[in-house]
Length: 449
Image (cartoon, rainbow, N blue to C red; front, side):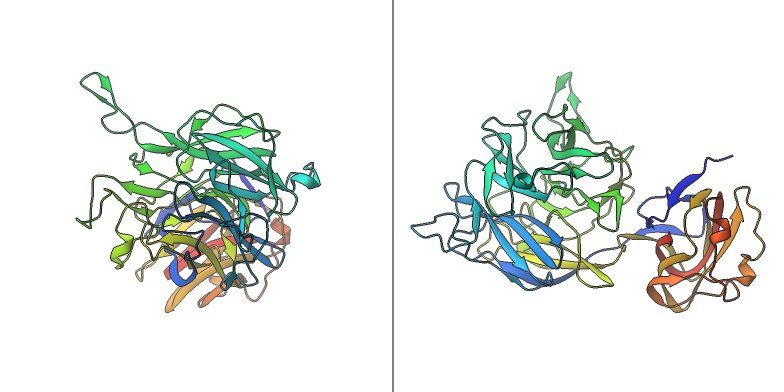
């Protein structure tokens, strides 16, 4: 018998097939963020066409954003913006860093390093003076920073914490609430097609590495993440984050780089890029079943030049039904800017049913709670129905498909019922399977509560 999966009262999304035992007539579908408004034009004197690497978080009722402000190689710093809704952003005059004789700007860090990645440290043992931490790249190495407020930063030590280059992209670090330690995801070099030609080793693809630490200063050896048997491609960034509604799931939005293609024949640099999507349940083995683009350049020719469509670190809720991420477009153009894109809550992927319908059955699961809640959408002719089985696949009395009240509509939270009864507490703590039938519908997530 298949071993039961404990899900407790967690939200479980369908970014992978971890829950699914059998499936007929259905498939997992990747959904795409919808471009929204431009939130920042990088047009301040201390910014420039190579401003990028956004990092966003929601702290209480406040949204906070850090990004690289780069006017030239000589003027490259880290800047800060703030918002009350994640849509309208302000660049406060902080008075911290001097630029051309004035501190009337939103800069929070200049040297050493660039591509700063700050985070709110959720380590319960973190000292108040280190409530925020960050990594920053400088001269091919990585330094550690600390701050009490996310604005006033200083080096944790003079020596770099990581030296095994390359690090030439926005690198990420955070306190992993699952592992109870710090993790970092950095640029690296992985294998690839033709890694050996004529007995001579050549450079592999741009790839992603992870290391761990208990104190943020001493790190394990960087190791390559594993994407199974999917083809290797150049992945230039990672933007790894724990999903805010289901932190046991790690999300990545790497920038896929295709160096051999040029769209604009007059552009001086080769290569074009876009964002892709991958997820993980352990932080090292990533499911990359969705090889298609997550965020395309679209019909804007200034997004078809090199190193565009970089998705920043952080996914944040911007309403009860919507979450947002932020990406840089028009990179290296005078019009370089930061744009918001939105998805429905939990809406990275779904179990998708065509009009002809289909069904799936979960692996045995053990839950805690008294009702089953689903995040779903159907057409007006579509439907979803659920029945409960024991671990052996026998339907449980009272939770049969004919007793299930047919579900249709579009809701983030819909309580499943059988003959108007929603209580499933008698099955809590016992191995059960869900058998789900669907027609012209998407199922994004489930949860027992």
